[in-house]
Structure formats: C-alpha cells, structure tokens
Image (cartoon, rainbow, N blue to C red; front, top):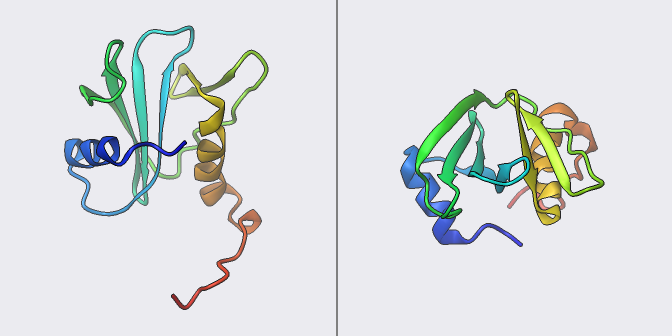
Length: 120
C-alpha cells in the first residue's frame, strides 16, 4: 500500500522539499515504540521521527544522510527488519520492495527494468 498523499505532503512541507520524493516508507523501532518515516530524494535520505502515538505526524528529524547511504539489507523471518545508522528498525512486509528499490536505484542500477517509454 503506498503512503497516503497527505502524509507524503506533510513530510515534504516538514522537510522543505521542493523536488521529487523518490521513495517514502514508514518504520518503527525494532521491538515497537517510536515511529519513523524514511524519505528518500535525489540528494538525501531523511529519517523523520513521528513519536509512538501518531505514525502520521512528523515531529522531528532523526537524521539526514547522503543519498549514497545504503538503507538495507532487509532481514526477513520474524517480520521484516533492517539496521540503519546504528539503529534497528521494523517495517511492514508491503514496504520491503520500496526499501529494496531505493537501494537498488543507487547500488545496482543495471538490474532495474528499462523505461518502456523513455521519450515521455
């Protein structure tokens, strides 16, 4: 399920992003607790803390990293989890492809499918 447009726009406004958001997905501290939103643009990966009660309202910027930073890999088994910037996060299975696509775009670009309509 894609991140709802209102949440995407709140993150865009909160971060002051004028360009395109390439990827966006929610995550939680491993084991529950605080919520986070990972926002990936052409220039950066911003991690927004949302707090534990509201997963849809940006509260603070937990960290900002260069776009060349790897987010994954995702470990599966007892739910999907990954380590990023020294912290462990969990995410819903439906967002694993989003995280993987964000990493693939930078680290394995040749494996992405070609644009079927490059002139549009």
